[in-house]
Image 1 (cartoon, rainbow, N blue to C red):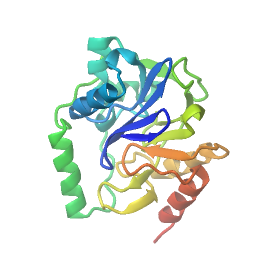
Image 2 (cartoon, rainbow, N blue to C red):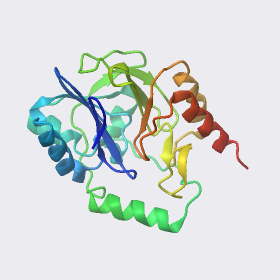
Image 3 (tube, helix red, strand yellow):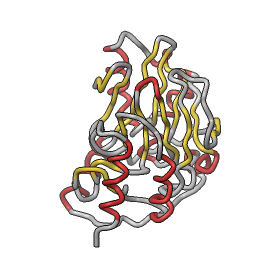
Image 4 (cartoon, helix red, strand yellow):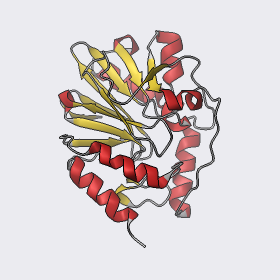
Length: 239
């Protein structure tokens, strides 16, 4: 799905990944669930592209609903996969976590589980090789993505700022539709390891001028970074 010039999304408001498309190739942000592979191929095909045009995958963190088809791209097409060093073990399946769920509504939870199961979320393919990144890195990939450390959801959570598409990709640093309650709008993301740290990390987005705030779960937000963060903090402060 085309969001804007050079900016495309695959998946939906349950699980999403994003493509930055330039004349020099494609940068993929997150790899969703393994079953989104067909969506990726269809999106690329519609642009006259193939997986060979993907120059790199940047994972916002190492959870199973973000690593999806990343290993398939790496193994079968030689695409390098980038992740923060603190989440590398998680992406390789060497580190397991059990974060709290927080508020849950049965219908929303059932929709999330059903979709994840249908799209391969119960059959994880972990990475066998990654390239690590750190806060402040500017990667030599299409769009010159800038890495912003956002610890909290996981130790190695990051956001990725790509000025050429006027977007910051936030992974699970926040959500714009809570997959466990169905509540729309910017809010803290569920399944977070350290909620206070995740909220504090939102300060790291201060000063970023970007129209698009693109999460791993939820609808694309085009109301700017400052407004998105303000709404997340307001929801977090609710009793």
